[in-house]
Image (cartoon, rainbow, N blue to C red; front, side, top):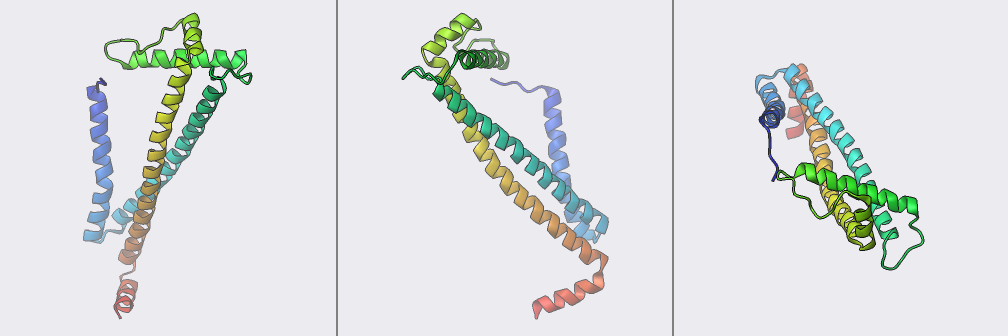
Amino acid sequence: LFTCSVQQGLGLIVMGAVALLIPCCGWQGARKKNACMLGTFAWCNYLMACTDLFAVGMLAFVIYMCFSMREVSARCSIQPPSSECDAQMRQSMCDLCTRIDKDFEQLLANGTRIHMNATTAQIEDLLSSQKCLDMLKAYSTFALAICVVLVVVRCVAICFHSVSGCYGNKLRAMVLDPLNQLSTSDSEWD
């Protein structure tokens, strides 16, 4: 269904290799007692925690938009008729259905239409038959479920990156001050 170009594939390989370099940097830094490598490991983990935090913020915005789309589609529901959905809101829903249809046309490799046509008259007909509203509600529910899962995964990643950064800094401090390392390690075992 979805094709991946060579450039995208190479990009994923490079990103994976860079992501694997960070733990290797921490491991080699600890093994060779290299404070610079341990500092790099720690700060890369802190940076990843910050980017994960940014991603959580963006996902929170998407979640808010999904709830808004569900609310608007419920407000414009034909069964039972609602006076809360004015002509401007209905036109916005028509435009949104048109954009979604065009996006899906571009995504499908064979160019087959999902179920809608791009003319306003036909979209209004779909709105009156409730298909478009149901589709928007279903898509927003699906996107909402995916975003919630991604937020949970990103929050776990924030925790792991933060803890790894702290651990890297502690190892770096031990490498920089070996005398303090001996005194603290002896007292911890007593």
